[in-house]
Image (cartoon, rainbow, N blue to C red; front, side, top):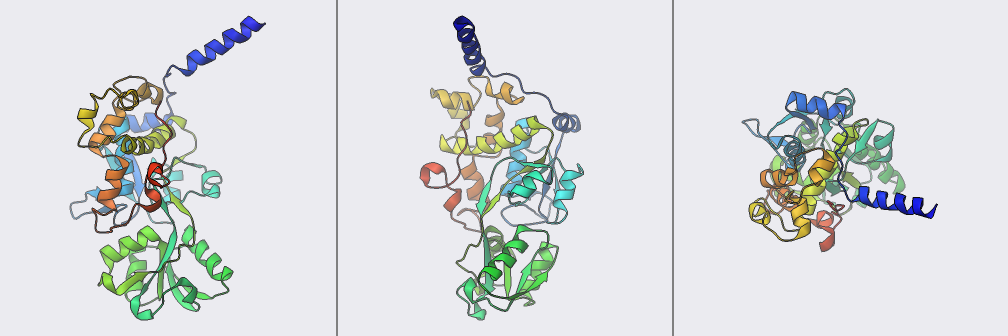
Length: 341
């Protein structure tokens, strides 16, 4: 009996040390057959997902889509972007109109369960805030009793707003508008005293849409947890794994100092972890069901997480948002990727 137990233990250890091929899934098969990933994004949030006059999409959410395409196809440009409103986004994913939703979407229990979705990580830690015109003379959200507030329906923002005012025994008058462009226009036209959404969205709106950005302030209160991340449908674990690990790969690359500029040089590294991440030591690609150079392709074509953050929303962008909670765990932030091994 003891010999059988020992034999089973040896077999388990042996299996644990070998990367086995991932099971193929119907979602992934359909994406490969199509030759393109269809990614649901916002209708336009500076720094997260917005298109220029030539129709080229950029943003931190867009770069997650690009990373997934790089992992699957070896080409980050094999993505079709479908703009969705806050109310349309979940229907678009459920119906199969999009393969993946990366649209400043908050990870919550009900969305992860009742809607038939899987969240595959957090690409931006956020929290809801308030923006007002300086002439209102308000310095704190606690001074907003009786204010009119512009907000989008079908969002966690709408619920948090009601909860916050109720908890602080204040009243407000909601101005509910579905399309974000119309919400912004209403706020800047003076139809409401306050615009509320995730703080990142407030910074983006002020930088990209305010007639005079210096006339508007973002109040200090952050009233919620808004972990934003990519979402897939239940049912194809392999595709969900690829999305999840594409995000983790960008975070892990930053942690090990692998950038889009030095990744070719890093291929020559003697560090066994870096060799495994970049596929010089094979196995990780096979386990995920993609090419062994999947991380190399992501970092070379899209960048590591720090590069993505910096150019889209960080100090290298018009938004100038500090890393804060989105800093690596080694630097006091929350971005932490499980090891690629």
